[in-house]
Length: 418
Image (cartoon, rainbow, N blue to C red; front, top):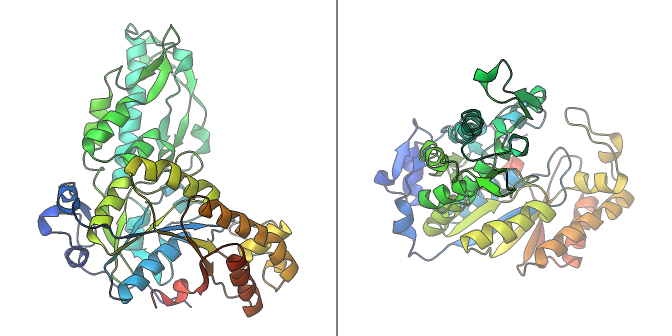
């Protein structure tokens, strides 16, 4: 069984461990804090730490353990005496209260306080939603009042957001109730993590860059068919003001007291699926090694990490860790239906080398995807109780044969950094 989460250390002790000065910290209670952007100037000239990307095979609905591996690996480096920092995304509250649950690791390798990491944290998601919805209200109001930007209402693509799973709001009609309530049109709600504002926040290098990115958001077309931006309608400055605190990364800790930066949460299926550029730059200027995670499989989150986040930030990882699980590969080989909240199919809990061999084609391809970017990849087989030694040995050998520089069995859920 996994040991329970330990009592957190004071966030000032964690900051000192990370090399963050007291004046660079904005505490939110005893166990979490914002890091002020002034730290970027101080760490800019320092040698950059080792940059480790954690990605995965195509995940099943149950996940394959990327975040748990990210946290456990950072803890392992810390146990070796290196200054290590993990950087991960903040969980969206919709999945937290849904079947998927939180995204802050598990067992002996998780971010604590867990309820803070998985819920409101320091309010960044609320700030993103406020900025997003301010722009939506701004557009509807300017169309109502003489439409000075000559926006064609039917072309407005900007939707509202809320950080809960509420499918009843996916498609709605606004402006009902008479001319005082706006121009009637079809629109809807997305989840906050899907907002373009979230993607802008994650890719920004500082507040000024965030302000510029917000201004470039396209929201509609005018009568000539030209794009209308948030800058053109005058909303970008107000949006940036709402995000002035959210732009700073959040400092938390792992179950073993390793510093962890939790910042932004763009989804990988509709955005670039990575934590913030600012958090990684801060961490790389402070630590000997930084372990970061890219959402979903290597063909999605890692591709976007390389082609969007790294190009935007001017960064390049030194190595990738590709997380695989025996049960995940067997699911790919069997095409067995895995339903969250339901017991695993019996065929996934017993040894099946045929299904594992067929499913391992996914491992081969994901290794190939990472190697195409010119960095070495190491396979980490995230262990589960039903795995047999024969199955684990097969995946390790298959990973090395496919071109991995190394492969190892990982037990960070139960054992943490050890």
